[in-house]
Length: 428
Ligand SMILES: [Zn+2]
Image (cartoon, rainbow, N blue to C red):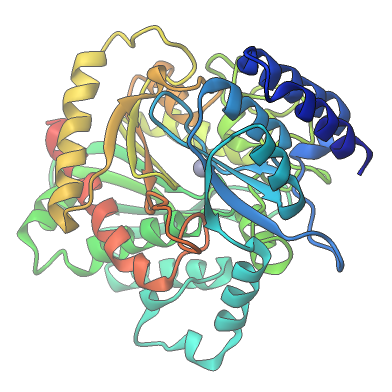
């Protein structure tokens, strides 16, 4: 590894320097130049390759810059003061971080082993137990079948329709739930813009399930359903999602070409700005132009056609409730109102299982331009929030990141449902 040697020698000469922050910045720049864009591309593991592990870096800006430039993949969607940075590196890169006195904790000691273990479990016959549908993760076909079943259970208030099709022609299924009330508030919740965020896929499907099945026995659900015209799109990115099942568990983007587009950088508010990349191989590649992708375009068309007023975009992970703006540090015009509603959402989530989700504006974090939530708020004038579901990524070995045990599905669903009901309530 030519560039590792070079970086190592550079580090050896710099770590005793009183100019350590500057030294770290130089090393980060060197790694970025030598590693080039390939460092940001998470290739499927080949035999004999070094072990890939996910680490959580508690970092000052310089340490963060070094960890990020070494990263094969960045798992943290939100960056900012007080938030750690989760990255994937190889075991061979750890000495570089150690030499630069960067501190980290291991989230997942071998991300490929974690993915293999999950795949083996899913292939076992017990994974398909019909009586416990939310006791395991489900692929796109199974989710579409489940949505169809829900529509059949209550055809007077529930319907299933495709709001568009993906790059590869898969339907973008939307379950519409509308009760008896007059003038219901149009609301959208969606998951899986990012393919590897399986808990968000399952939680949004589960919210649909609870709202349909518990309508007759839960007064709070009946009241919510009756006053809401709710659209639920559990899988915004079906091609990417299926690819995480078939080929690469950690794939994030859609399946445009060989590299894909980050759908949550493809929306037209501040498109092309900071936190989004013009480079096709980057995990935050924003696409050729705003709404270049059929998946983001379909959501745009739905939001405009239905005059969506309330919106939740579910992701994993970090346990955060985020409100606009995300693309700029300038406060949103409705910041006080958004913060108040966000506080009620976070409180409702906490009431479910006493798990704390931190509330903050995207504005205080590392900016990200072209996100769905900023667009739904800025262009469609809806109350819009991004929710990063479980886990917080507690630094317990092997328990962080996107691969979570299936026992997390139901409690995460409870929290997503609480957030959904709270937004409906708060906005009245
Ligand atoms: Zn995401």
